[in-house]
Length: 196
Figure 1 (cartoon, rainbow, N blue to C red):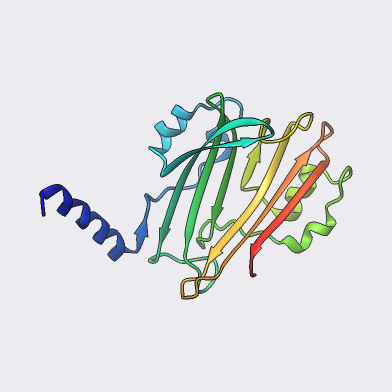
Figure 2: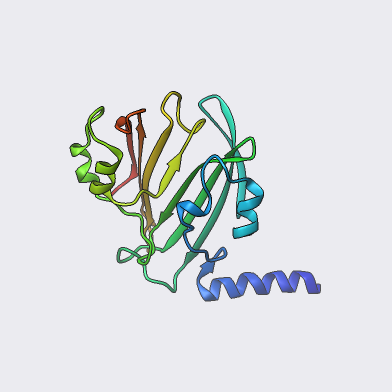
């Protein structure tokens, strides 16, 4: 076995023994990377190279995504029996940041939210401030082309978990709320996947 291969095997082995995958990171504040102003290079300069890069089409526009992910078995998760995972995705259109999503099942910065309160949100009446009072600080934000015009902005809430023992049940929930020109709810999209 040559030196390069041995080094690669050692890195993988140490990661497995440490119970970690990916490079750990903290959730940046929304102010750290303003939507409509931040470039791809500025995010890389602050956070390093992403784990994955891809392209998506949203509202007929090509958008570049970059993903950072960290998981470990040596830290506390938000729920018992759940693998702690932290994921951060940034979206760029013409090299400008147009959206981000942060999802965590770590105890320290989990993004779980109370979806039983969604019935209190009314289109055309509930304001952004009222949504945040009900659900807390959003874990995602979007501007066009991630949202349709003339709606200018949307916020989101997301949570995902994978159980630590077989059969590795998975559950995910996502909420996206778009606001109109008066900063009132224009659209609300809530989806779930897997069993709670």
